[in-house]
Amino acid sequence: MKYAFIFGTSAFIVPHGVITVADEDNAKDILSVRSVIKDTDPDSFFSIDLDISDAHGNYIRLTGSKPESEGSYKVTQERNSVKVLNADGSLLIQVHQLDEDVAMNLEHNITAEFEVNMPLTFIRINGDFMAEGIHVVSENEKLWVNEDSWATSALAGKSNLRFTADGVVL
Image 1: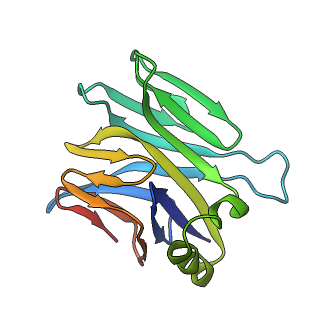
Image 2 (image 1 turned 90 degrees about the vertical axis):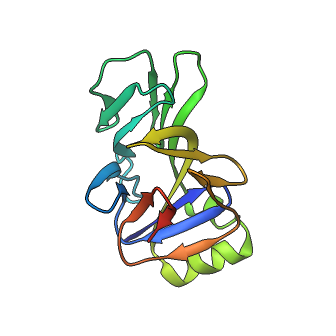
């Protein structure tokens, strides 16, 4: 099964549920999907590992959606979502497994790419966070990775989704 990571109005389809930050010498997984909701299993749930920081450099690490690092952030989990809030209550990151019906209501150019890559697990990510010095902002309309912005695009790749200083790489 492939994964469609949805940021704003853009989707990146990859073979694994992993997002990596990379430079010329190193690569580090910042988000790994551990488990997903399956229609055939009513006890299934969405779970992630996360390794990011906030804008002030405070480290946030989740394993199985549970905090491993100390900090003034708050983690809330629902069956299909993990949300990390800053100390002031603002959103740091939300990682949400969408059902197929919701995902297929996105713009046609995106859903057309979904259709040729099915079956997919749909993961929407919103927030404003840092990952190894790379600033990621995902809002309703756009994704920014440092100064590189993406909107209304759908790309499929054969490797993990990677954020670099220059933007997104598949």
